[in-house]
Image (cartoon, rainbow, N blue to C red; front, side, top):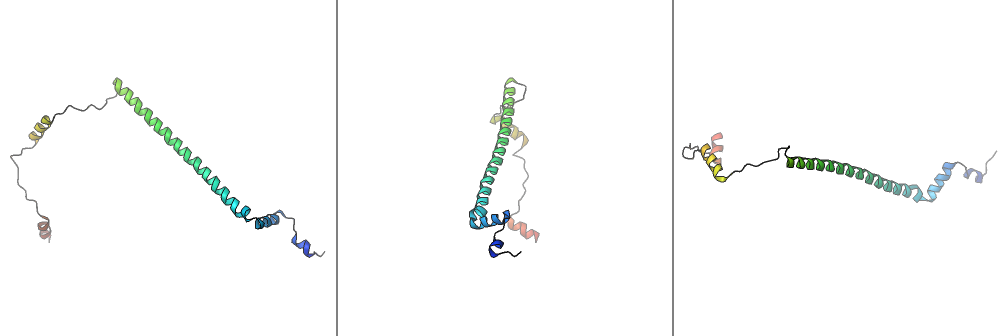
Length: 121
């Protein structure tokens, strides 16, 4: 059972034929997986981003509905809406003058920066 030179080279296993095919066509071995990975990755990322955008839109819609409901309720009255007080400057001045007496004050000397450092040393 001696094998000839021609018989040793040709093997019928599928892996060896695939290796030969990859050596003959390097695009199939390296380029095609690279391109398919890039395309499938971009499609997958686009799908994930679209999902997060949809979730954000639903949240915004819910918040908008809540705001609109509160506005509608405040028009009819149940929700206490913000009601600013009618304030005049004269009333504010009188209130401030009652709190602070500008004729009675105590003089306190504030130390200069050079005096403060010399006192510490």
